[in-house]
Structures are given as C-alpha cells and as structure tokens.
Image (cartoon, rainbow, N blue to C red):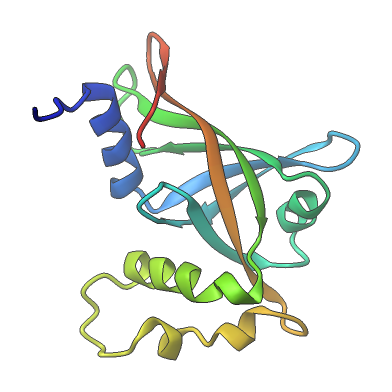
Length: 159
C-alpha cells in the first residue's frame, strides 16, 4: 500500500529545500538570547549543517547551551501569506570524524550543479575546520518541527 503524503509534511520539506538561510536562536549560560542568520544545508534526516567562526557569539552559546531554535521562511512573502517553520533543536560542533559528511551536504547546497569538477573535500579541506583554524562546521538536530502560517502553528513529523 502506497503512503499518501501529508500536505504539511510536504510543505515543510519544500520550505527547507527552497531556502538557503535560517535564523538560528541561541542563548548563553545566563539565558541571554541571540539570533543569527546562517546559510544552511541539510541531510536526508533533516539535520542542518552550517559553517561559522568558533569565536562567533552563536557558536560560543552553542558550546555552553546546545538547545537552539530555528526559523526558516522566505522573507519575500506577501503579508497575509506567511508560511514558515519553527524548529526546536539541539546543536553542536562537528568533530573531525564527521566532517566529510557535513562538507558533502554543505557543498551540494552551496554549489549545486557547479560543474567545477571539484569534490567536496577538494573544495573544503576538512583539516581547515579543526583547531587551530577559526571556522567550524556545526550540526543542528531537530527535535520538534512546526509549520506556521498566518493563523496557526501545526507540529509536523517530516521523517
């Protein structure tokens, strides 16, 4: 028997696939909030990957408090036609052994059909994203996903 796609599930996937930036909400140990727009890529389980300076405020916040919030939406939408996602998640820095996967997903989103012939590891050398270098890849794993429109917020299981 074929599974019938749920309209909210398909819309949530489309919002993720069609957008390049998410707003990442973090907080420090004292619960002081911070929001940052970051370019993101995702994998087949809808884990999100982004690249940032280890010294950025949001990176420091994640290292002290891994609980984050995400908003993904197209800011060009007309008023009254708003659709987007709100996501509760856990984030962390990606270790050396998992960098290849993160880089692969990031390159697929950042350089679709680039035709350069460069593999992800040729474009992004994993050794450049560990100490002593400044940039790091982070992974955000969703725990709850909500699709939001002008009238309501609905929990969605996109897995």
